[in-house]
Amino acid sequence: MSIYTNKALAGLKASLAADSLSLGPHWIYDTALIEQRFGRIESLSAPGPDSYHKNRTAGDFTHYGDQTFALLKAVSESRGFTVEAWFGTWKRLMSGYDGYVDGATRNTLSRIDYGDGPDGCGSNSSDLAGASRIAPVILAHHDDLEALVDAARLQTRLTHNNILVLESAEFFARTAHGVIHGASPIEAMQQATKANYVSAPVTDWLEKGLALKETDSVAAIAQFGQSCNVNGAFPGVVQIIARHEDNLAEALTVNAMAGGDSAARGLLIGLILGAALDQEALPAQWFNGLNKAADIERLAGALL
Image 1 (cartoon, rainbow, N blue to C red):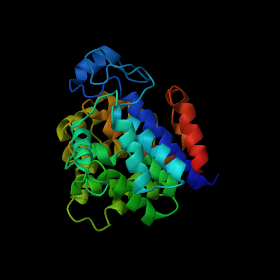
Image 2 (cartoon, rainbow, N blue to C red; image 1 turned 120 degrees about the vertical axis):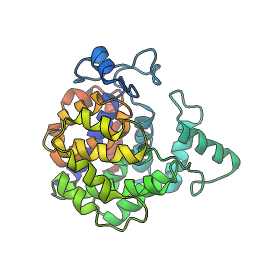
Image 3 (cartoon, one colour; image 1 turned 90 degrees about the vertical axis):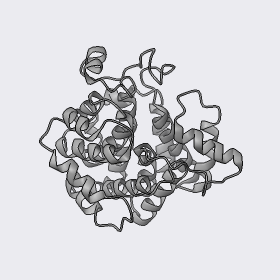
């Protein structure tokens, strides 16, 4: 396995581990309550009975992680990203899904029922989560930037046909490509802003995140906003990556402690820092504790 492939695989593993690490406190906005219930989050935990994910257990994923895993299955079986395979795999997963079904998913399923195909079924949701699933396409196309960017945008468009989210997916795909090929996370993010974005103010979002690099991340996320919306979530991801550029485990812990939509942020933080720092930076128990760890290894191995 080449060094580049190994780094892309590390990004995938850290991305999915980050989602599961956030499962317990996901969508709790009171950070004091998170600390009271979970303490310092350094292990995978089950959600409480009042959670949106109350039927999940420690080591499971949120609905974002489940969709990321489905994307891994699609690219593995197709030996690369195709819209048709992703559409079919996603539809099978989310039709009758037993976990939380968010607004973007409900809207997309309704459009599919109406007859729309993969080119037109996506919601107009501005949630960053649609862009957060990209780790499997990074693994599949890490050696081809153009194919990687196309795949990142197309996987996002299936459920989030919103230009701000689509361009966010491109930004983080370009960032992942940069760290895989040797740039530091901050350098890769700065380089990624040079692409031609039509609508998303990625340079402004990057500057906002970097401006609070020395601020405690829980406080910074509170300032940007803990919600799903890309306008606050994007600079929040940047801030945590920049502040914890050399410490993946700390980045994922503070992200979970920061509350709100930590799973969407975590998928991207794990991807970028995992790819930058390699597999040794991810605590082994976080990946090995995933209930789908063996399946992830199998699907990634088949793809590679």
